[in-house]
Length: 81
Image (tube, rainbow, N blue to C red; front, side, top):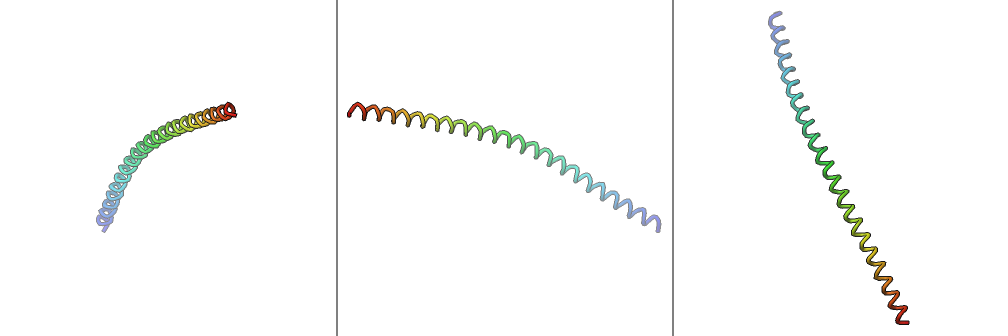
């Protein structure tokens, strides 16, 4: 009977060790995936910042262009009067 209990205990220990190894592998895989996702996130943030910078530049150029056109129209109207 004692041998039977020891065998069952050994089987359970082996099962637990196997599960533990599987969990370790999963953790390792998830850590790698997490690292890759962080790199991807950082890259996306930089791209978005660059895009916002370009859009801000375009917006400023449009504002300067509109102000310039309004100034020219005002001069033309003044000269015509």
